Length: 54
Figure 1 (cartoon, rainbow, N blue to C red):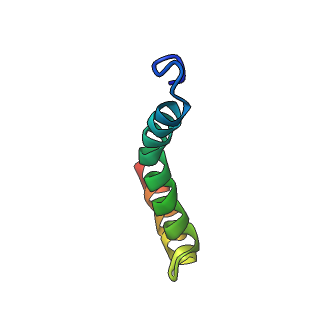
Figure 2 (cartoon, rainbow, N blue to C red):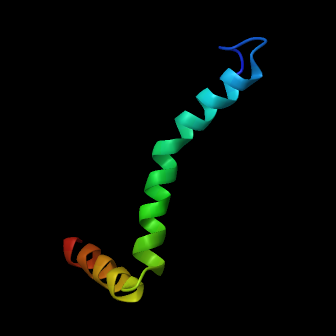
């Protein structure tokens, strides 16, 4: 990303941050699933659904 914006550190950092956003959104969803109000139940349901698929 830095190579794509030589001499413009701010633009390079902005491009880098934008590339990370999709991963950040997925992480936020995963964290909510694991640690949200029904976290333990959701994780149990998730695990059970994968055992059934095998």
